[in-house]
Length: 162
Image 1: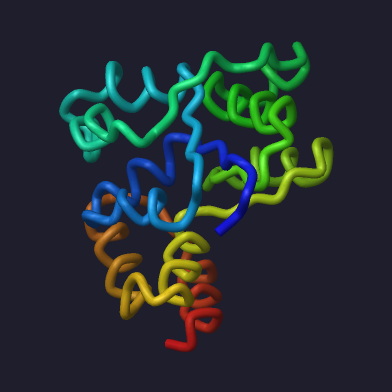
Image 2: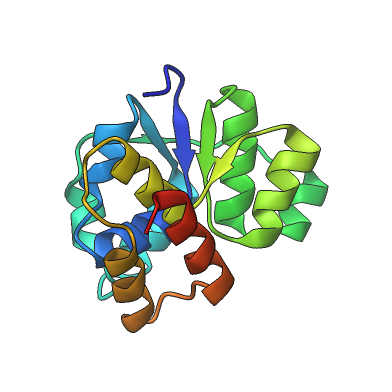
């Protein structure tokens, strides 16, 4: 379990909620911080969206006012992704949890942040003995409309030994 905080974007919150596994974040990480723009995007902006009520009632999620992103970052990414990267950088986060490819690349290359997405969270949960398999959850996410590439699913399966 990482000592420092992790900062989470909407994608992993929604994807894990879709498959009833939001609590994996609480089990894997000591502090899970959700910048306010991400919380608003998921909860206020999506009351009928998967996970909105679970996320709103998850008292262990820490809501935070985001660090102000650099203007260029705000232009390249959406408000949620920009807030996650800026907050992660400011807090020297152990990890940022984000699925969007472009935001992941910027997090790693421009900010030196470690990133993990929904599939990686499930792999970590399997390694920690919290779930028995990764593939059924990834398949369920896809069936419910969450985009995951076939290549990503295959890589996660290989990492999980499935």
